[in-house]
Amino acid sequence: MRTYANRKAILLSVAAILIFVSPLFLLGDQAHIRVHDNLDSNLAWYKVLAESGQLFGGIHAVIPQIIGGLPRDALGTEWTLIVWLHTWFPTMTAYGISQLFTRLIAFLGMYLLLRTHIIRNEKAHWIVALVSLAFALTPFWPSGMLSTMGHPLALWAFLSIRAQKATWRHWIAITLLPFYASFVLGFFFFLALMGIIWLIDLIRYRRLNLVFLFSIIWMTTVFLATDYRLVYTMIAGSETMHRVEFVSSRQDFSQTLRLFQKNFLLGHNHVMTLHTFIILPVLIIALLLVLFTKRRTRPMHIYLGLTGLNLLLSFWYALWFNKIWKLPKEHLDLLSAFNFARFHFLRPLVIYVSFGLACYLLWQLGRRSIRGLVYLILCLQLVVLALSNEEIVYRYKQAPSVGAFYAVEQFQEIRDYIDLPQSSYKVASIGLHPAIAQYNGFYTVDTYNNIIPLAYKHQFREVIAGELAKDKQLKRYFDEWGSRLYVYSAELGKHYDFRKHTSKTIKNLELNTQALHDLGGAFIVSSVPIENAAANNLQFERSFDHPDSAWRIHLYRVQSKEGIH
Image (cartoon, rainbow, N blue to C red; front, side, top):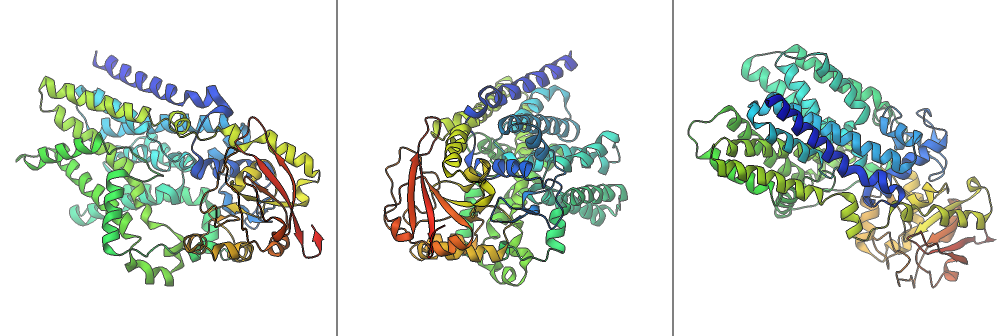
């Protein structure tokens, strides 16, 4: 009977996941999904890479479509399934499959972890299933894949190996996960934690546990092998990249404490846990229960450890931006180029395991009313997560659909109007993301990427130097970060999506058009009119509108000192 109940809980959870992702398949290009670090970048990158002919390009290969030769390594390894999904399928089909696969693995991993290592009481199977479902429905960063959502499955495997109870399934898990996850965006920090656990075992119990150590080394090796491009760039890359100019440590200690509080209470955009209103109060109640209990059980000790780790991760995240790191970052490029604050990417794992334990500790009190309250809490958290569905959130925010964002038919009209081979000219974008032009096959002088040659960043800066001089925040944003090489306007600020119904115009644009011309820029596509276009050696061509597009595009031809390009 209990086995049937377990199966029922699992099947209902899987059905809930299928329903949750169904809008992606049912609506396709009419679906509404995240723009930030998604539509404005990664989804366009996958398409550009698939069409570039450089999927297996060598370590010195470039992508000509972006900035005249973006290093191939900037678009990631070919040994990850998400790249192949976007090679085999249209964008939204690939996106939907990725979402479904990631959430199913996230559920499976958390279920196995809780059932095997954390909550071993079979009578609490509904707590295990519902917490696992809640974890699987969190709004993770889409292109992160299993970088954080795969942590429970990996921890299940490593804890079994550590306890010398591993089977081939555990070894398969840690071997395959690197093919659908990022080392630098999640698993570097997870594997560092596993290394710390091994070291604690060695010091505290005098237990060498070579198999556990080998498993950590093995998974790290597979990650480094699959992402060999990153390894080469960091170790042997001859070209200096823009990340060496990152400046992030400028906060005093009071600002650090405020950032710690914000991260602990609200989480982070890339690893959203939505734990503030339901989970956090339950965690506090469970903590009080544990603290005022004299005879603590194994789950209580685990819970205390996780609570401390949760606090430590948020504090470390905030501390990374403190002034104390300024000098080390100035002298060690690795500290400025690599974001060690991302240890907080472990928090989704920590928070949801803690949530499961908190619910279990309350459930163990045995009273029917309390057990009913526990199930109500779990259901309320699921409601919160259901309402976080991308289709609900971004439709409510009146974000454009995928089709309206990329505006394929409208950009086809622009391409036909220019009537030149796309490889023979480059465009720049104002008031909208360059990824849109890239997605539609245009060659661009501007871009948003994680790896950009420093020399090109400096060249591009000459184009917008006049606009950066007008706005200190914009200047700092570009100079001290600079992953968005955009044609900024001080009048627009850090806004990149002025849609067709905007009344905004640019009255006093100051571009170095000659510098833009020297980079190969022949046209500007702008989502707002430029009133002083002629003063910037820009010749207005025509405006393009389309009923299915989010934009009204104004096309300008770039003129050099010698005349029209």
